[in-house]
Amino acid sequence: MSDSQIKALVFDVFGTVVDWRTSISRQAAEFGAKHGVEADWLKFADDWRAGYGAGMAKVNSGEDEWKIVDEIHRERLEVILDEYGFPSIGDAELTEFNKAWHRLDGWPDSTAGLTRLKSKFIISSLSNGNIALLTNMAKYANLPWDAVLSAELAGKYKRHPRAYTKTAELLGLEYDEVMLVAAHNDDLRGAITAGLKAALVTRPDEFGDAKEPDLEPDPDFDYFAKDFHDLADQLGCD
Image 1 (cartoon, rainbow, N blue to C red):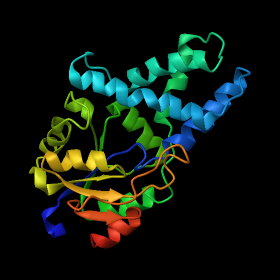
Image 2 (cartoon, helix red, strand yellow):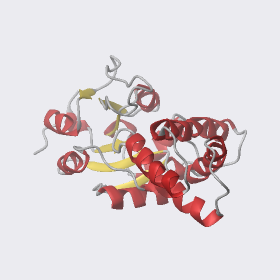
Image 3 (tube, rainbow, N blue to C red):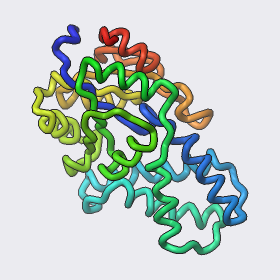
Image 4 (cartoon, one colour):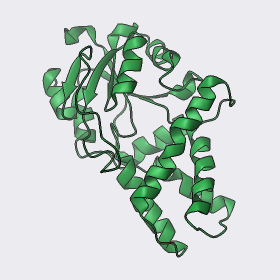
């Protein structure tokens, strides 16, 4: 396809732009040391993340009323702290630790790669993370978004079609003028179903040895790149 048709690139964030697993495990290790708890902190990060998909699925199905990702993370955190043998911890301290998800490091290519892509396209988040989380994360990780957009604005989580179409509408663009960039094939398939374009950028280290990453694109994806610089090269960015 011609990249001249594309006017905006919207990005999945967790795993695609930021290294959530390493960032959470590091902060969890510090939190555990403070409270005298020893554990496999990478597994802790995986276990905390495990509540994310289930919580969003309940919202999309109507089983739960709308709740932001900060709330979903907090509910899961309170479960796994007991499982990992933490003592009773006050609400204020738990609230602050829950914001570990606001403090995630970008991948090595994220800031520079996004800056290159921004030179030619509108760039925005399209994450299930809530606006406050994404704004704080952008500040922390130096992510140069033109806009911070979220499924929160659609009232539906990806991979519900409305999460994708609402983002394009907020940018004032036709659906096929917007391309989702993500490291996850299921997210990209959701974007295509909603009428957006799709680019797979691989993140082979996202899950460590806990889960296989998506390293091969579906045939109907528009672009396939090893990182943001590779995508910028393919799209003719400086």
